[in-house]
Image (tube, rainbow, N blue to C red; front, top):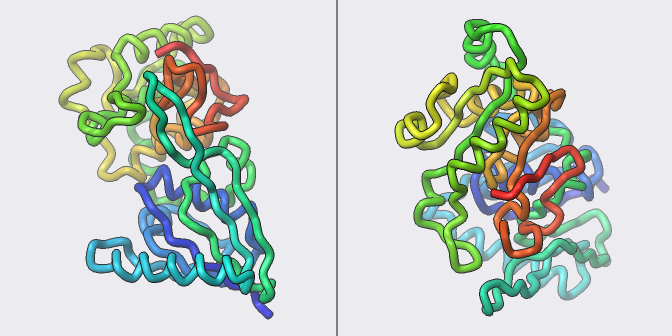
Length: 287
């Protein structure tokens, strides 16, 4: 019987890339995969390993998503289908405990071995990236190529500054926003390797950033996929503590350092969050 699987995704493009990489790592090629909330990935990337049927994640579909999850969890608990889950664990920060998704994944077998339910999870581990089979659609690379052709000679590195929703979001009781000095020091670390590096600024709030980090070539893609394409075509970069930025660093050419914030979302707390997010190809510095 042909393998079938159900996964209900959460989050924006960067999260969907990690979720897809996890599915690549555990499901056999050719699986008939039913998903919700994976539309940003599917619109901008080729992902041919599975036959995917996706339902867009919208407010009107939230009740259907909850129903899918109840059904999947019940079938897994009854050992009718295979199941994967990412349990939550306690993290201590500032004298408080936070129960968040940890780094482990559990698997259970089911009576119908060709059916699999993958429960809600983000699966943000650097180890999974090697299994990723998705690739950015070629159409999204043209604008970045044209922009780079107009720059002075020298290697190219991106500087991706995440602002937007980070201005209001908190994790471990604090803002995840990185100080601009982190990006300056990241660029200095890259210039120590290649002094003639041309830096390209990318941000979800370019107008608020460009005057704080002057002297960079500003690229504003028509959409998130063109921004991602720019990161891919660079030799290295300075990433933000965002999953989109992480994947841009992973897919770039990596002949220059990829600078990242130590601890990622848990900088200064003595641990990485997400657990296992720092890959061997990253060069962490204190934010």
